[in-house]
Image (cartoon, rainbow, N blue to C red; front, top):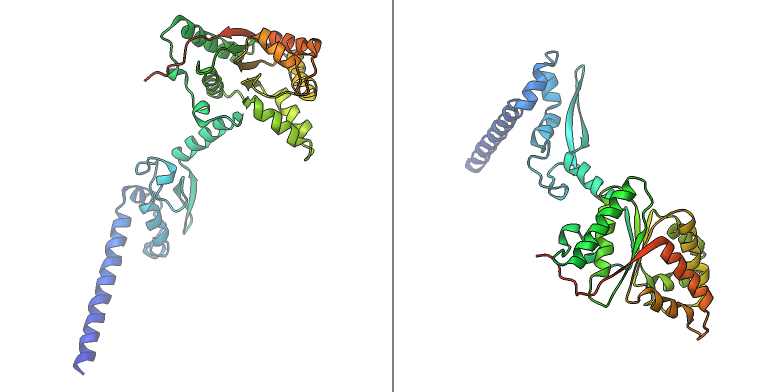
Length: 311
């Protein structure tokens, strides 16, 4: 008999603690300032109504609202991450709806902006380049910064402005400059594509097999701002030079769509490179046409000093 009595006593004490805990939780919920304010405007709700919806009120009370307790969406403590609850009362019914919080809205806006920069085999460091990271310690670098600002301002205002043909030896930061321009344009909701030329050649060849060649050519023809990184580094064929690169540049020249280029070659050297195909054929006239289009779309800018990122 003693063990049974002892067990009963423990159960009664435990049950009392549960009741006390529920009562305390209920008190905490109903004393929440936000909940008190809502309920004070709905006197039609009696104690039974409130008890019936207590779990919803508890969920609302526990949730982070206006992102006070969440530094970012990943750290959100709410049931639906990135959404904050709103209490709705209709007659005797209380319901919860969730709306995007300011962190979620900011995150989606950032993702939307990131999508404005398309890239093909471009390093992450280049895609994250910022104007504030540019070295502007020399006259040469200050000229680059001026060109970037002038282009972005003109393009944003709807005025056609030539891109740049940035040439110089390895290590002068040519590709980094393309990243800076792309991100400056992104901040103004302008779409751009940065393409690494040797991979573009391989990509286009592979596209013949899956019938996606024409759609890719159309994309590069029509993107708002096109950037071709390291032109001249690729092993070129007459087909790619004339049917792909030539077609893209011709369309963009006719439609006043700017193009940026980087290269280790100046324009004269690039023309020599383009004139000789990977089969050894020399076609100076066709190479000259490509260079002429490049000159119509961009202006040369030579870099001679090695690039130094700002600390």
